[in-house]
Image 1 (cartoon, rainbow, N blue to C red):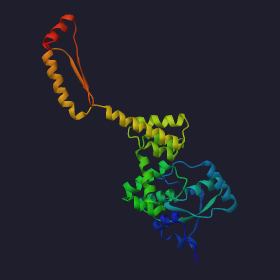
Image 2 (cartoon, rainbow, N blue to C red):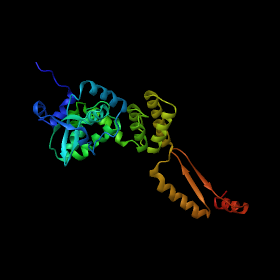
Image 3 (cartoon, rainbow, N blue to C red):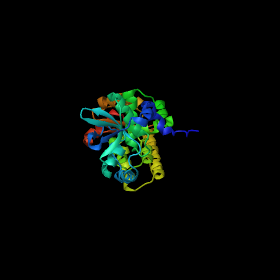
Image 4 (tube, rainbow, N blue to C red):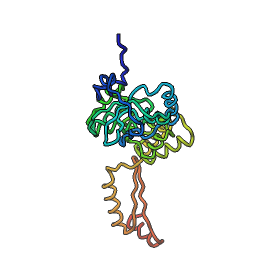
Length: 284
């Protein structure tokens, strides 16, 4: 009985359905220097330590799984397997097993995105950006993406929310200064500047995710209280009208401020005579 393939393998096979038949006799040894990385590679950061570990494995066992490339003039463009290619270069391998496929540019991008999303060590910001590209450029739904990479739709939705982080906070997450858990807490703060300042506080005080969630809740609660204390905007035209009438009647500057239950009227005067005049106008 054949072993059941893991869920993470289904997406790429669905995009390249005829890879397996070619593996039996369609693998070509290509000079590693004739292969160029994909310029549209979604992954921008590669863990050097993990690449070195993979390079050591390649030195001992060789490149077990071929890379997938597309012929581009005198060279080949990588479609899938950039980590293996980079590690093979570190290992000093001169030739690498490859499968040459002819794909459109859109197919190349979709395959690159899916392949990278199937890796568990993808940075959450890169992952969110990849999801966004699949949705915007390939008209995929969150459900489509979830099915291709073997994750739940809610997991895809949660990562996708990170796109809405302040750019400065996204950089913290991209550089591994903040974790995905920290980012999920911060996304609840709509004000970008407050979000950024909170992120800096989390970093400066070395707060863990649980502590960060409590901090964010405290900030959100203070915002709600502050909002409740602010004057109701719907009364503003009425108050402005009263302020203008008082100003015209008294012949001086008048300021009317108001809250939910009470307010204040400030009348300016510039001398004792002016004060006496105002008192007469007010019948005091």
